[in-house]
Image: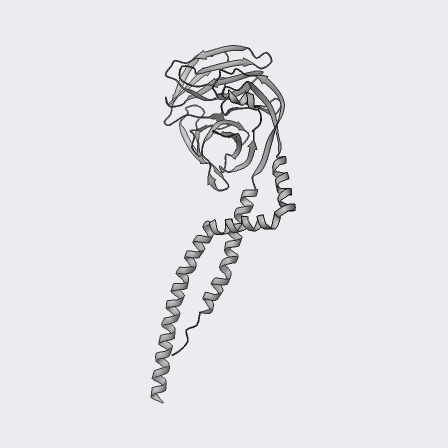
Length: 333
C-alpha cells in the first residue's frame, strides 16, 4: 500500500504562517506604542465654585464661560478670571439638565442632556436668542473652522453645521484600534479634539480626520485626598489661545488649574525598569499575548485549515488517479 506524504505546498504554508502572524502581532504592538503618553504640569490655579456641577468650560477674552448641570441647578455663567467674580448668569428651569458649551460668531451654544435642545445665547448680554434641535443625548461640544463637534457619551463624534446645527457627518473614535466610549467634554484646537473620558482622569487627543487617538493625557493627582472627598469627576477643558495653555476643572472642584502638557515620566521609568529587571520575560509575555489574541492569527489559522483541506483532497485525488494509471499500465504489459 503506498505511503501517504504531506504535500510540499502544505509544508510551505505551515512554515510561513507563524512568520505572518508574528508580523501581525508586532504591528499591533507598534500601533499601541504609537500613542504619546503625557501628563499635566500645573502653572497656576484659581478658586472654583464648589457648588458648580461643571459640564462645559470656555476661555474667552479674560473670562471663563461655564455650563453647569443637574436639574434645578443648571446655569450658564460668565466668570472674571482675574477676580473670580461671576459677572453674569442665566438660570435654567427645573426641567433642564445643561451639558457641553462652545462659542461661535459672538454666540454661546449650550447643550442639554436629554431635552434634545441646544440653547443659543448672545455672548455679551447672555440673552437667549435661539435654539437648535437634535436627536440623542448631548454631552460635549466644541467648534472647529467648518463645523461643530459633538459627543453623546459613545465612541462616536458627530459633526454639525455651524449655521443650522444639522448633522453633516460622523467620526468613529478608536484607541489602539478599539472603539473608545464615554467621550465627554470637548475642546477643539486646530485639527485635534481634546476629550475627557467620563469617570476617569484621562484626556485624549483625537485626530478629527481619522478618529484615531494619538495622545493620552494623565490628569490625575490635581486634587489631594481631602479635596477629592467632596469633589466629583474631572469635567471641564478650556483652551486659552492667547497663551496656548489649558484650564481644567471638574464637578464640585474647588479649583481651576492652568496647565501645560509634558511627556509622562512614569511611562519612561516603567519602561526603564522593565528593560533592566525583566525585559526578556515581559517582552515574551507581551508578544505571546498579542500573538494568540490577534485577529490576524485566528483568520490565518482558518485560512490555513481551509487551504490544507483543499490541497489534501486535491492531492489525494491525483494520487488515486496516478495509482489507477499505474495498475492499468502494469496489467497491459
